[in-house]
Image (cartoon, rainbow, N blue to C red; front, side, top):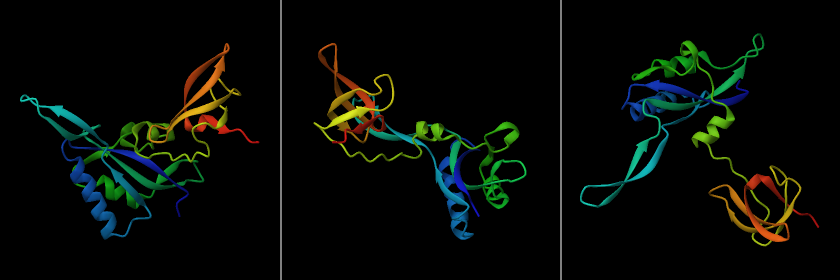
Length: 186
């Protein structure tokens, strides 16, 4: 039925984000719609607050108050080449208590792009690396494309790798993303 999946932004009453997400998840479970509505998230971040007395407290804060992200199974309409969710899934989310509509022109749902999803941190892109500290790698993207260097540090959590390259006869560290380098093959 579904060709792919896309994230959409749902507008809610401020302060109702968690309740709306829980209600959508309950309806999905009760109506067995797991193949139409795949995931529901309220984007949050962990913030350390410093109180008047100097004590610190970790608090989870909503990144986008008034918004919930919902991942729908989508299909392509052959007539219009438009990607859309099922009418049933749209109806369930749109009529959930606390939902005021979808984000898009005239409340017409518009899916987030892959870049937006990655920037929002909703889905983590997992990159498996076959190199480590001390390995020779070739830079395959960016300003140093084609340059060979030695891996100094790999940080998979931050999606970064530090490579030492020779520039003007001097070892220079360059910070890159994990998928911007490849292991030099023997």
